[in-house]
Amino acid sequence: MPGPVTTTSRSTFVRRTSRRRPTAPRRATFAAAALILGGGGLMVGNVYASATEPDRNQDVGQNQGVGRSEGQNQGGGQNGEQNGPVAADYVDITGVRPEGDRPREEADASRGSFTSSCGVNANGLFNSDNVIVAPGVGNGAHHFHDYVGNQANNAFASNATLANGDTSCADKGDRSTYYWPVLRLRDGTRERDADAPGGGTEGNTGRIVTPAQVTLTFEGNPRGKVTAMPRFLRIITGDAKAFVNGPANANASWSCTGFEDRRLKDKYPLCPAGSKVVRTFRFQSCWDGRNIDSANHRTHVAFAGADGSCPDGFRAIPRLVQRIVYDVAAPSLADGGRTSPLFAVDSFPDQLHKPVTDHGDFINVFDDRLMREMVDCINSGRQCGSGRGQEPSHAPAPPQETRPPAEPDPSTSPMATKSPAEPVPATSTPVTAAPSRTAMPSRTAMASRAASASPSPARTAPARTPSASSAPARTTPAPSAPARTASARASQDGGGSRGGGSGGDVGTPTQAPPPSGNGAPGEPGASGSTGGAQTEPQAVQGNLAETGTRLWPAAAGGVLVIAGFLLLHRIRRAAR
Image (tube, one colour):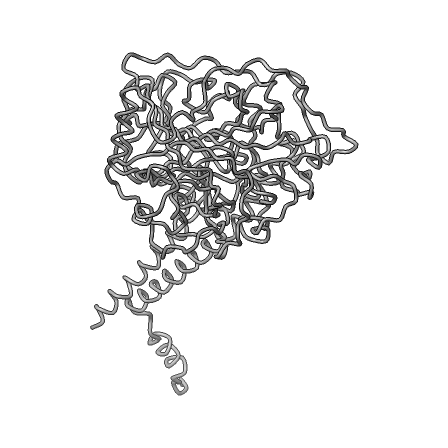
């Protein structure tokens, strides 16, 4: 006979089958929470990785650069700095081959010039900002700049600030700003920026040298007429990070008075007695007709071809040539600059003060009247402007006695030297290296900083440009310590934000470097120039391009977070 029926197994079954399964809204809530948490984690992790990446890149870059330049890790100068320059960075100008003839001008060429006289910065206006590449960022250049022209230029200067600023130019219709890295004698002098960002704390030490002469000349085009520059047009030339990025965008040239038909791009010149050091920037002279700036600060302008032709869609504008002369003696390489100090430009710490990193910056703040006068003067073949007569002659230098290049004694010199035993081409072996950091500290002489106004490149009508000036003052008033804190990630000269640099400080090019030669790209006499126009290479690692490739995971995380919140919102609405 069957026994009593128990309910244990039945109750267990009931409990199992009656357990609540997650409802659709609850599952959707879990999914939304996962999206928000996952996306947030992706954003935080990527931003943290990007924030720590520059230091890693810098270390890698410096390690990769070892051996690319002889003696680069050896001390230079009296006080034994370990960040250059070295004896191999100098070459005897008398051993450099002269350049060829200038290109033939066509019948419709604009043969005139306009020269603006704006002084030599004898009043000592310096800072380590770069308002073009790092607007609104103090110490955005990580090296000091000389300024002539506009006296209101700092990181916070807006177009309105510049338009209302004072000017050092003789013609007050030229309020343009012209700036470039300072030149220093590495003689152990402690300037007032010795312990400041952009100065001594970033390897920029020694006495700042005031130029003996500054000439600012706007030239015509060998093929046809030029048109007015737009007001507030920004142009950088050269690359403050060329030692790391390679020489494709390098565009400064070094020479000596009496030898200006011989130009060096990646070496400092050793000038004979009685000759002065000359530093020249030849700016881009083709404009896209629309923009006063671009994301990488380069692609809105371009160099003309050797025949003066501009790329399709670009128009010829006056070409600015900045010529800066210094009365400095040739350094004594044999004893590492102890007898006669080495000279070098300020640079980012990992650029080692190489001459190839030199760069110039320009913002056009000519008034309309003076810009029209400039264009008419150039197109009609006249020489005009407050600085006319100061332009250097293009005639070849007279024969001079050639002195043999100094060769250091290995037993006494702390630096390896390679002195040319035979004539060398104006542009020596291109140096390349690894990535760099940005910025430059600001020099004082800026009384009050304009309240932070973001410089928006307004696309406005044409304005004018400056020219030349000369003055004997050679010693500079020492800069006072910068008034603000250095920004870790400002860029510039190249420089700017993490990849681009300064005044001419913008990332790596997409095009292959032009063949090395005595001249700058697209410039008369440049080796490898062709009749066609050459557009300026676009940066792929600098500024916006580099930021986009590094931060896309954070952007994806942001999309996930937004999707999660939208899902939660829909769930709440459905539950009502």
